[in-house]
Image (cartoon, rainbow over all chains, first blue to last red; front, side):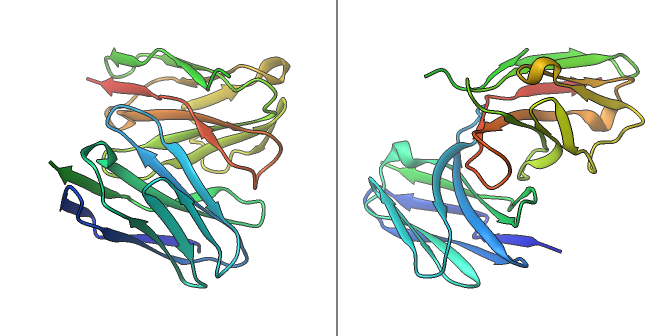
Length: 109
Length: 114
């Protein structure tokens, strides 16, 4: 069975304090790994898709990387507006997305 | 470009009452998904449509849940009768073509069953 585990569950950073979020997965035949951001009261907002080990993608202060067993979302010099829940999901073949429970990030000024 | 539209945004009903949620996907997206998200959890797929056809409804509790996607555009998800445990956020998402493409989510409908 496909599984996704995200850690930590919650993370509190000071503005400018860089860190990383982890997404460990077990899946048979990874088609894609997806990162979403979700703000309170809103739907998930797409950030990145990674398809193969070694792939990296960047967007502003965020950088996502992928290995055969896990993905990292690196946040460089975060700002308070980066506070949100970050969701990781995997897709095997043409099957459904399997989501983790997310990491709640709070960035304090 | 307009995103996925859902209505209502909030709904409060008493148990055993029926409720319906509506979704309008992004224009040109032929695949539509309904997800359920409980507090502190990630979304879980209920049903996936390719155009008008429900191609994956294995997680849909068919005794009380039903869905339709007439003309391959808008979709409606219905619960009848609602139970206390159905309180959650119901998310709609759409993608360009088939499973495997990036899914874009709507804002969700927050359901509270009393």
